[in-house]
Length: 208
Image (cartoon, rainbow, N blue to C red; front, side, top):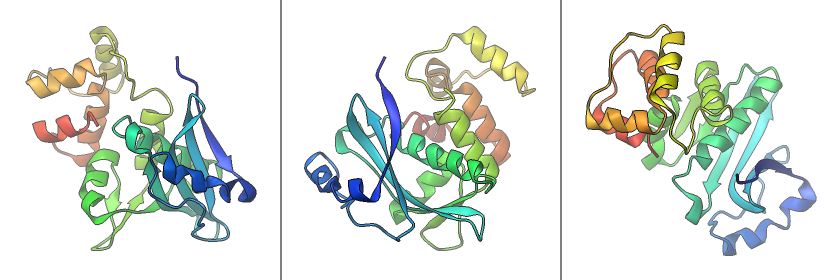
C-alpha cells in the first residue's frame, strides 16, 4: 500500500519549492497569492504529486482556492479531487460549513461542475462549492468513496439500498464499467443532486 499524506508548507518551506518546476510542475509555487495564503501538497511515497494554495476568509466564512496543480505524470489519478477535499475538510473544521470558491481555467469550468458538483458563478472563471458539494468531495476522496480497486457487487447493492435510492439496475456498457470501478453509488448521488440521469458520456468522464 502506498504511503500518502497531505503536507502544509511553512513560509520558509515555500521559498524552497522552486525545484518543483523541474519535477513535472509548471506553476511557480514559490509565489504566494496573498500573505495569508496556505499551501498544501499531496505526497505519495515521499514525492509531491499535487499542490493547492488557498486562503481561509473568516469574515465571509468561506475558503478561496487560488491555484491547484497535479504533477504531469500523476494526472488522472484523482489527486485534484483529493486536494479539493482536503481544503473542503479544512473549511468545515473552521466552521465555514465547507464553503469554497475556486478559480478555474475557462476550459475546465464545465468539467469542474460535472466532476465535482460545484456551481459556476455567472459568466466568471470562478466556481462555488457549497456545503453539499464539499461533503461529497470529502466522502468520495477522503473517506474511500473513490478507490482504485474493484468493489464487489454485493457491497454496491448494500450501499445503494442504504441510501434509499430507486432499485434500478445499470445495464449499459458505461454503467457496467461504473460498477467495476466502484462508482455506482457516487453516480447515484450526483444524479440525485442534479435531478436527472447522467448521460453515458458523463458516466465515462467520472472515471477520470
